[in-house]
Length: 137
Image 1: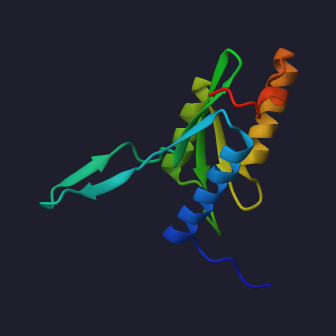
Image 2: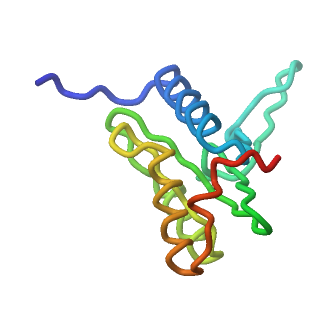
């Protein structure tokens, strides 16, 4: 069996795009917002630091009935693992009660959202898991 390759940008972006597309198809009432983090340069070469190191790739809002849920989504491909700064961001999200999904080739975004909705349904006795596919937007 071949050894998995380390991450590359195109593979990461393609995987992210496919995961978001699939989730948008299943959950009509979810919106995704890609987050760009890092050092960028203006046209004249001035460096500009955007966002905070470790922030997740995407954040999302899911509207179900009279509740709106916020998710942070980090995507890893190949041998990718959370960096030290990403672990700090996850810890911050956990402390704030924000769901953090680590999406890999072994665990899809759709599966994680379904699992989350199942937990919410069990905790609150609500019908969120059954209403997730309704187009509420």
